[in-house]
Image (cartoon, rainbow, N blue to C red; front, side, top):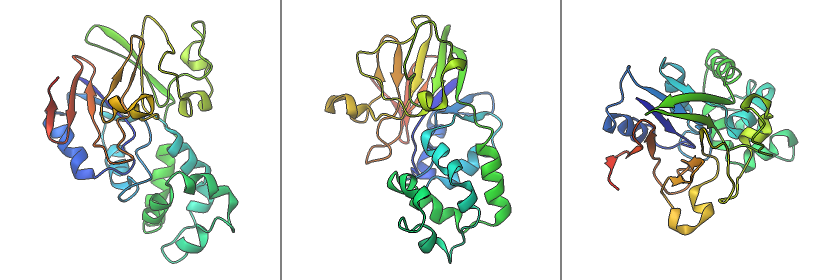
Amino acid sequence: MIYVISDLHGSDHKKFMKILEGASFDENDTLYVLGDVIDRNGDGGIETLQWIMDQDNVHLILGNHEAMLLACEVMVMNITDRTYKRLCDETQIQIMSTYLKNGGGITLKTISKLPKAAKEKIFDYLRTLPLYAEVSAGGKDYLLVHSGLGHFSYDKTPDRYSADELIWTRPRIDERYYSNVTTVFGHTPTAFYGKKYLGDILFTDTWIDIDVGAAGQEDAVMLRLDDMAQFDYLGPLDF
């Protein structure tokens, strides 16, 4: 079975594990996490990120928050718990301004407590993250990306999109992508398209948005592509 989840943004790691447990996820299954594991809440998602790094059947797609953390690597590698407050002063280090404004502070605070080897392992891993994945499940084909397809064209193959087009895009609800493959992404909370979608996965005829708003007050939802079953930390969702 193939599962997808996105935009955990520091969600409680125990709840994340409960989602997997409720879906009976095991070594025979595959999970794709469509970016933005880190920032905004809890420990900044570092516990979940390190867990993902240790799993052979769990794959992280690069999100804009992972990309922002990577852009701060030189400074982050020199963070210690003692220097955290000074290093994160926006007036002193302008390069971190965007990242901090997007909830990166909590992640930096957690990283500041890690030994250098653990920091290096995280950045080595982040540098290997792909921008997209192509999978088949339940007799259908899927394109998995973080944010959608910027400047979309039917004649444009996934490898021709820039990183920014795959990690920063916010498609209109009436925008249509490839007709022969369903594009699955997060990045834009579904409530952005209307309050009626708050906390729910949004399905259209060519794409699926699985960011249900875990960066805020909503609980993350995992989708099984084989049969479109959905799971939160309480178990399977009935529709």
